[in-house]
Image (cartoon, rainbow over all chains, first blue to last red; front, side, top):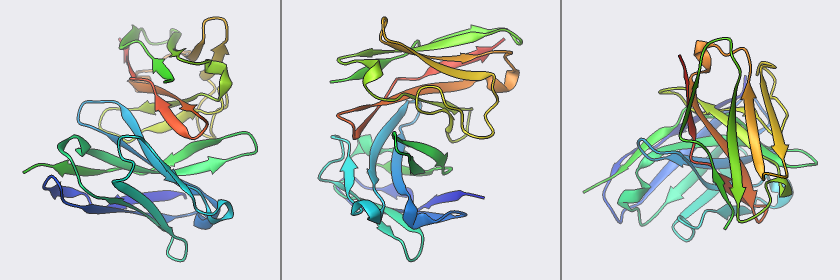
Length: 123
Length: 111
């Protein structure tokens, strides 16, 4: 069974940093990319960014709202992806979801979602 | 910038068919694939349609997706509505191939 479990959320002050982890199981982690999404309280879904598999040089892409502040990384030996969030703002308050990025010859799309972890940025 | 616009809410009775629209602006809806996600209250999203009209395993064939190039609109159709289909539905596509874009979401109420 494919599983993605986020951890590391919590309350953090504006300007500080937080690191989220996405621990996975049930699939060959190294063969897949990982995408992160977020959802502010009562709002819709927002794409944060993704990291490709090492077959594609583990390169990453980010939404404009987090570029330069957030970094996604991966540890294929431990089947874990991470989202490093720096210079946090109150508008970064959201539930953060880790997802598996499935790529076919035609496109890449999300096929599995984690349950999410809440990040609250407040003084 | 490419944007996706969904109706804020739709409602329909059990057993009926409902269609949720997702209209593109600032580009062609057909230039890249559209996905649809279901999010039941208090739960994480799940993928119900990928690549315009493909269903992941486990998603019933009551769910279908389509693209209308003439109206620049993607649609999610749910037939034989069940109370368990009551959820928020989000469409998603891409800008510049790598940047993901979401619609604002549609709340489906099954009366």
